[in-house]
Length: 493
Image 1 (cartoon, rainbow, N blue to C red):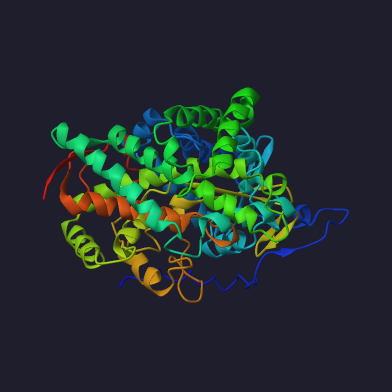
Image 2 (cartoon, one colour):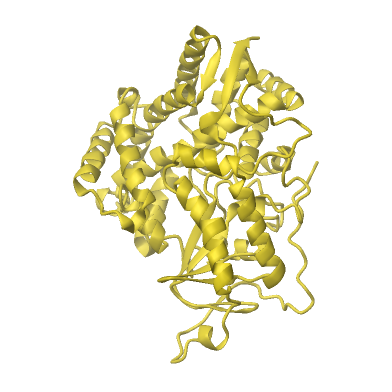
């Protein structure tokens, strides 16, 4: 079994610090007296051009297919990883301050720092980072992701009560899986009528029917207008503060969500939310505190990249026959009764998210000065963890560029309730398909349940040939796999 390599040992000159030490605010900021290493003007331009610009151009909130195709074709994501590697070779552990115009940024270079930062959300590393707040306020200004203090705690608790992050099998699984199977069967029937053709348009139509039914209820199955409205608001969010909030469109969208929550159709997450609010002893999860209509858009939004990961996982399975045989055997073995755990398929989805993270930029913001080994990070700094750098670092990961679902399997068997990417001591290399630490995605287990179940339904009855790409066993995986260009031919088994 391939294991995640341990965090590299510190250089002898680097004293160990158990974690970022928060300090007071003296008359002269300590970050001025003892600053972190700072990128040169030329390096700042390189970071802008090679790391930040391609990621922003793809669309941080909703993807722009044309740009995604260009980033794949030109290997821009691989180039971004190589740029950060070069900076790490020069500056060591960092973090590296990048003096961007108008907004200081700290680029995280060290795996241990990733764990420190993400384990210390929201203080002193707030999830409510400024740019993220400007982006998400276009459609969910009260979401827990950009809340802080008591508001964040209450809204996070509401999300966890509904999504059940500690349970691999959601309490509503027996209601959810028939929905997944019905929509998968319709998708397969449509493909059969078209010579077995399966592309992103056909897959995503089925996927979002599943999402609307699971989140809101069967009544929303064909409400493509709702999805379109959210997409339009997300497109505005791509430009964050550069575009004004469309208050009228946002309120129209949130009104639709409120109506669905009031309806609380049995068998949906909306109904689970209503139940969670009813059973809340202190009443903190009510409409004023929990802002439920602002949490639901995040679920609809987050299921979009989950669909991308599912489609990419299908491409990986179509290209790796031995893995395909293994997941089919496990699915058949677990089909006897109850809800199947499908750990091999879950591991495949996690591996697709490692190879091609759908959240490449993980952002935090310092709420006070924070001490690191090589200096002090000022308050009010945006902290950037560039996930592809850690996921694709061949200097430390022998599986960096290959399909290696086995790295997830032991963790899934050992601790299905926790973070399978960590070892028993929590010191694994930071692989973060759903982020890490106290701000980890509360919907991760539900996503893995739905994605693995959909894949199992397709693979149960169909052979799958990947027509658009070559991802064979002997090949390095591309730095980006464009889901919008994936094409398959399905045939009866």
